[in-house]
Image 1 (cartoon, rainbow, N blue to C red):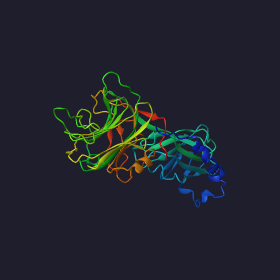
Image 2 (image 1 turned 60 degrees about the horizontal axis):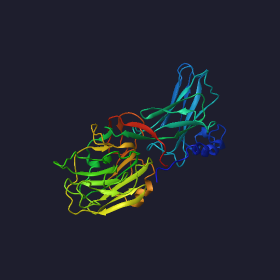
Image 3 (image 1 turned 120 degrees about the vertical axis):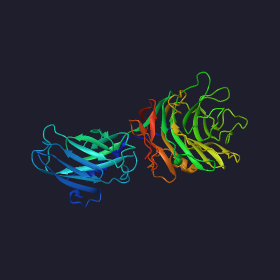
Length: 416
């Protein structure tokens, strides 16, 4: 099972009846201009003049008219429209689905080729929406344009007024080439754990890399210590993709907890070379897969693949300290590491609780807000550019992109 697809075109079509029934019309029976329309969350009015233009602002929206846009002073009203159940989408995290605003006026016509700039304003300057298409009531099948991002603001030029839909149409992820690409997150106690702690580490990944020559593993996300056989050093977690060797097949995955001396829950207790909880399978098949590694102190470990329990083992009462003070890394260990992950990674989440099967299955395909109980870090990789991967949780565990990891559009969005 991979990531599910979602028919985005159906969103503006599904809203067509709602809009054409009167919400976007100046002659609506609800008379939105009088401020009594229950769909209107907030509204503001201002005068646009030929000489100075004008700006009207609301929490969440702004419209700007340049000088010369109108031929006579005109009163313009900007309204924010509630669209249940999506009214709280934009104030939260990037993702589903729609915000709606309406620009009302009395006999306003923009002159010549003049345009006004309509802007959606997000409350946080990071975790930006991947891509916003803007639709007008009369053009539900084709967007009038893509909103251009500038920090927390998304703007589009409009040549006429009316009712507008802002629709999220894509999701970004990070692509790694396996040769020094890494996201490095500074050490923080909020995303490190001790031997008796419970936690969950999860992410989406996609890879089609096959073993050539000697097999090895590819780190997906973890907190590697830089240990060697001579200087073992603990680390609390790592998710890996294996490319195989004489004993292990291509495409298996592994959840590792390491105290520098022994292994927690090895499927091969006699092995000191390949520790960890293994999951048989072929997960380097070029499809998106979700992996969640769960640990509940000394009680046990579990691995869920694509929402299903695929491996488990009891805890190790003799395990020593697994805590370290090293960075958390995604896609590799450091820029000089040339055996990193090759493929795409998205939606990395770290929890300070042992998530249950029901909890993992219930939201592994859904977008999170960053404020969920127990969530320590969330990297959604929806910035779409730049060198910072922002943590959407309140802990601000922001990561730096090292090497040449690329932002690309994932071929699916998460479900609402």
